[in-house]
Length: 155
Image (cartoon, one colour):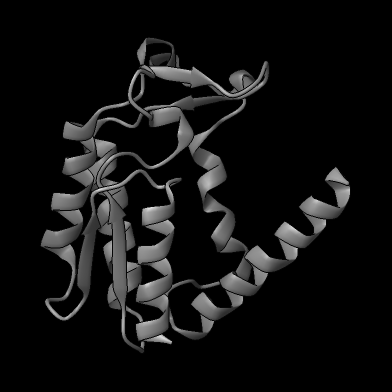
């Protein structure tokens, strides 16, 4: 069962990557997997990672909270990709957390630092790129409904 799920997931994510390449937001299909670099193997830790707020995903990987400087840099990269899109763009932002590991009560939960990302993204996006802020966690049904509604408007 697990192998089937991962095979289907991998194919679907690559299909999404293909759409993002066609729209000009990614250079290559596999760029969609760039987020793996945010959870480095513990054997590849930089010295400063040991001092950061983190959440152990398993015995090999840890979700490490980005610094405000890194959040700004990532927002600038996202904005450049979104600004390069050749079609309509909407960005849907969950205001109450981006993943299960940054939910309230976890050491990586920090809405103020999340706002650093959002403010930098807004500052660097073209004015016609709409940002929709949703008062929900990324894994809540309200956020999923907002994403679906935005997709239906764009596609």
